[in-house]
Image (tube, rainbow, N blue to C red; front, side, top):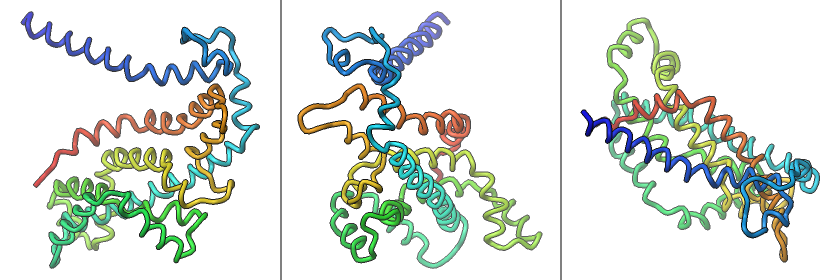
Length: 274
């Protein structure tokens, strides 16, 4: 009993230590956002600002059009997340529950795309976007990121555990495939969709390389590119950069807090089924 209790407390202490280590960069970012640029660079560093400068957050929105950058990122992240969740859920449901020729070959082909490095697709994807007129547009920022093999794989694994009895009962009531999916299968997958949704949202909110390549005009910049505006050729406004980073992290923090219970439930029920 003592050994078991000691082990539990050791694990808790280790988890607390890891939590503190992981939280420290965020605490430093928040602290630096209220400092002057001189104090951010001061040595030895201090976690508590000697003089508070809340006006840094005002400068974030007045020195550059940061609100526009956040709006652009929100449009991209929300659109990709919503459309991808619907399409991936439909694809996963079809691959898990429907019987048709070539189903396994299609699934293997989808999984195989996960092995292709993104950088090898960068030039072809850019050429396709240029041909379709997607350069410097929301279409170029959004459409290439909707299909994703990981989401289809995860939803397929989830729907493999969908009870056959529910599908048969829906068929007896006269429900077709689409009605069964939207009214019966989809409501059972909300925790999984929440887990996948926050992954998609954060991934598209924080994406840097593709927006850097596909956009030309300042009006199309997203948040990661907007943060670069506080870095000059010869100097960097670290206090404003930290304040902008704090503002940029708020949507993802709010989303995680709101969906925390569903995310935990989704992780719990995401066991890989054969």
